[in-house]
Image (cartoon, rainbow, N blue to C red):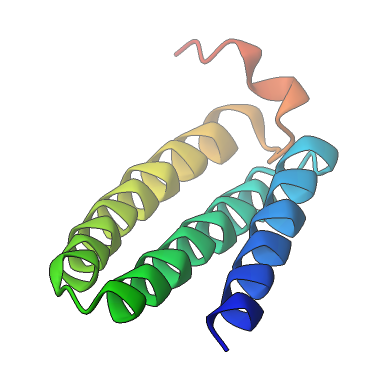
Length: 98
């Protein structure tokens, strides 16, 4: 039964990776990164349940905290980019001059 969840986790991670590589919009890239982090969290929970250890679930909590901080910093950078360049394209974000 755990293999189904691990396959789902691998598919989610692959979809997130393809999204980060293909997308050019910074918000879409952040969403794909969040999908990848959730895939890793799912695999941590599956292994934690399989090994009967709560360490994986504790680690998921810390990953979620880091993901929230990453989303806040990413949103601040996105807002700053849009104010300065009037675009959300990653190709336009090579230089952020004031």
